[in-house]
Length: 410
Image (cartoon, rainbow, N blue to C red; front, side):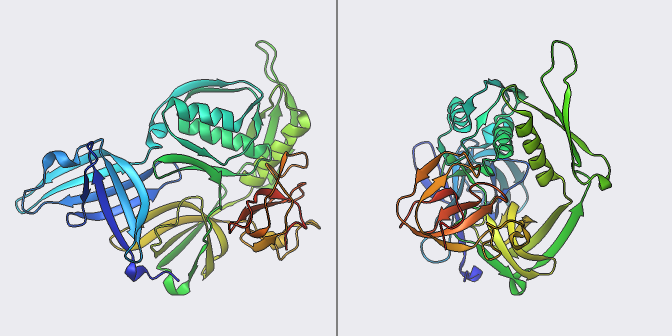
């Protein structure tokens, strides 16, 4: 159990010569957040200078800050960023500097580029090239989907990454995310956190929930390849919950993609976007290790009960509270299919017995032999797929990290 009363944050500034400055005596209003609409994490803080002795040039834009946190004497890096803005305020009794720092992904959120993806290239190949163009070190544990022609015009690199991951997801490669960790970008599966934190009624400060159908998709129209100046032909229409009205999205079939594959991608769109959006916001005791894309468990928190994905999180380091926006994960016991026993759900701890893990849930996906057997966690379940369970190892006895068959774990 986490004892929030023992949680301590501290902020360190690093200059160009490698000198470190501990800001514990001058920094306040410290917070850090990861928002839905941005790849980059943000650190904000206020520097108090009641005596007017603070060095003006110490906190200039472009210098790095490191946010550290821990529950005992030892702490660890939680987030690092580069100061991108500062506001100086002068009063009769004090001076203040309000600073905002962003992590290494900020340049991907704010830059623009043009890129044409040629058919036949893999997600990893494209990601590595884009990251190299911006000088960003990248650790890749993402999908290995093969993409069709993709013209990416006047888009931010962040948008390019997200579109590529979305295309890979529609091709059955699973859902992945991008985030920064200790100065490098990481591509990893969502819900892949090793520790799943549980929040109950005794520690929830506030709960609010919302259901929204304004952005639903109820019909997907599949368009083929156009000839010359002619309009692209309509090759299929896939309907979802049209009782909510016709809310249509276009799916452009790639030149090397079959109509059946395009229909399957359309079904994936309806599965993701064709249902009412239910989002819940919570105010909770701060756990600095909870990040966007993680899984948490809510134990009978009014309308929140079960496993949830963190969509955004804002940590108030001074108040020791955090605000999270979450969405409910699929209720796996209600899913159909003989290969999905009700006891095996997202978040279940199992023992992998050995065998093969695959790069996607598709029956024809490439597989690799797992070294050893041991404890693992189910992070995703793909109904009706050839390899329906995504496992991530929980100890060092085996290296399972991918999609596996039913019966390979207990």
